[in-house]
Every structure is written in C-alpha cells, then in structure tokens.
Length: 464
Image (cartoon, rainbow, N blue to C red; front, side):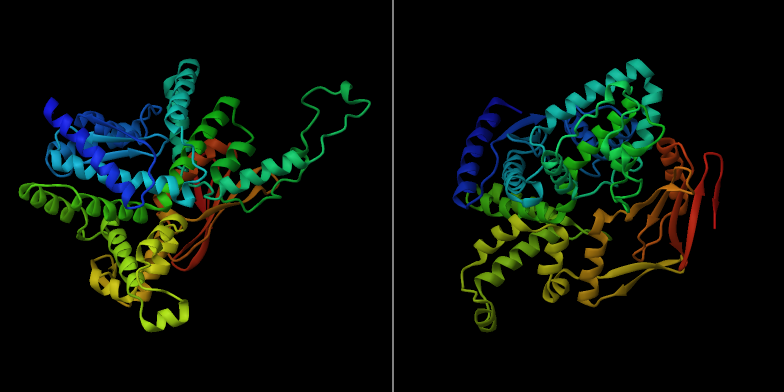
C-alpha cells in the first residue's frame, strides 16, 4: 500500500469517526494497523495476538490461509475487544474495502463498550494473553513441550464448558469472602502442620454446589490428581474463555450491529460513483443469505433494520397498548444493543414477516439419506434458532457428582434437549476428562429416546 493510499485512509478514518459520533455511536478509541495476509490469518486463527502456542491454532491458520490462497474465502478485518481497541486491515484490500472495514470495526467497538454482556470482560486481554503465553513457555521448558501439549489437548476438549454467569458467581463469592469473619486461631493450632489445617471450604461435604455447569472450573478446583502447574494452565484457559464468552453470546447481534452502521456511515462519505458501486457490491456480499447455513451478518442486520422501521412507524394498536410514539426507532435499537444477547434478540424481535422475507426454515437429515425441509412454521423456526444458540450451540453438560460410588469418580449428566451427542466424539472427550480427573468418568445421556450411561475407567469404554 502506497503512502498516498495510507494518507487517504487516515483522512477517511477521521471522517468515519466523526460520522459515527454524530449517529450516536460511542466506540472505544480504536487503533488500526495495515497488515499482510500472513499476519491477518495468524491473528484470526489464534483469536488474540501473542497467545500461547498449540497445534489447533496452526491447523486453523493453515485452513484459512489455504482458502485465501485459492481465492475461496477472505478475512477482511479482525477486531480485538480491548480498551483501546485494535482493528487490523488487510493490505491487499482496496481503499473502499478498508474504509468499509473501518466503519464496520467502529460498530463492533461501540458494541463491545456498551453491551451489558461485555461489561465484565478483561479490557487488557492482549497483555493477559501474553503473560499466559510466557507462563506456558516456562512450563514447556520445565516439563517438556509434549507433556504440556498433551495436557492442553485434554483441557481444550472441554474449554467451552464454562459457566457464562461465572462473573456473577465470582463477584458473589468475593463479597461473601469479604463479609465472612476471619477464623479465630485455636490455642493448639500452632502444633498442626500446614497440611493438617484445612480451609473451611474444604471441610464442606463434596457436591454441595452440584450440579455444576462450569466443568473446567470444577475439575480445576477438585481434581485429586492435578499438580499446581496444571491447575494454573486450566485457570489460564478458563480466564481466556471468560473473555470469549460474550462474543459467543452475541455473534448475530454484534455482526448485525456493525453491518447496520457501516452501511449508514459509508453513505455519509463523499464517494465517487465507482466507489459507490464497489461499496454496494461489497455490502451486498456481506449481508446476503448463505446457501445451507445462517449468515449472522445478514440475520442481525435485517432484524436491526426491522426494529428501527417498526418503532419509527408504530401501528395505532401499538401506540395505544405500549405507548409507542413515531420516530423512536433509533432510540430502540440502541436500547436493544445495550441489553440483549442473541437468544433474547431472536426470541423478542424475529417476527413472522421477517421469517417469511428471509425464507427461514428448519431442515433435517431424513433416514440418513437426504436433507429435507421439516418445518416452515415461523414460531417453531424461531424457537429452533434460539435452541441452537442456547449454550452457544454446545451440549449442556453438568457435573452431577464428584464422589460417585464413594470413590471420587466423576459423574456427568447431559441435559438432553432433543439433540443427541456424537458418541464417538463423546468417548474421546471422556478419555481427556479421565486425564484431568484421574478416576473413572461416567456420562449420562440419551440415545434413541433411552437414557444410557457411558463409562471410561482409563482402560476401556463401557455403557449401560
């Protein structure tokens, strides 16, 4: 990219920032960097700059880079939720593409700053990830790279199984700890060694908090076999997943919001006819339906547009029943941006008219032979979308007993909601969990309408 193009981008960024503020957006200060494709895909695969190394990130990088090299897909931008925020622009993008990306990124950073689900996230996560990487490197040096990698394989197999409400629970635990009176030392306490003096928390009977949704946290705290460095690695993975959880909870909203505003911001810029045509083509490619899958940019964008239109032009019935006044659309979408996540967003604002306009339906594999449309009723389609996004689309599994058979065995329970587990995958995960727990592991689930329990004792699998 030439110096002239960089200067033009700097000038455009000032205009885009001013337009965004005029529209009422309130983004974090945002630093933009122009990077080559190798850097863009490295950041995209690792999800955070400077993160620890693991083969799964390399696999993601190779897949994305190969798709880019063959012209099958392209990452236009990467944005990091920090304060200040960071946006990365691809150096091979055209000027109008990078202008659109900058407007899109400001939509994201406004969302990061103002959506309630991001209110507890670590805004210095890049520094935190770098610290984690340094600690991980120390463990690799001390215990061996293969040993650490094997342990990471086990932890990453369950990394999504943390509690989205962990922030609330942690804050509550800290407040209770601050409010609880300090332990009064007994006259003979000095005769006891440190291993003989147990914290009050350990004196509670096991399972008091069960069932426990946060499997990573539970194993980290209660595993009878983990060493301190292994618990530290699990704590690091847990902290990074806490950072990613709000992004998983708001994927449709976040991309829809950014798309909604990049369209409006770009229309306010002084573009040539050629630039307008290029912008229109790029915008259409971003917010268009994808064959066979849901495009979060398209769905979120259309819902925000529909909310603004409906609240700008309420019916007489809506005015009488809900006190709506014409022209409240902009105010409403900012309220939605602040308070909702994808589940409530779809449940509350995906209407029958939108389902028909977007041609949404449910399709399933019938008799293991062909895919068929099985549902067109808009309410059932909406409910299926919501169900797919509940728990980020992952199976809802809890720790039901940490002392099963009175032998410190781990009993997990799948809260079955209509979708069966992939049994081959589940068995592999049980092996990983055995590595973390060190005792037999059991998983209750449903197969073909019947409850079964899968077992793994470190040697072989069984079920009944």
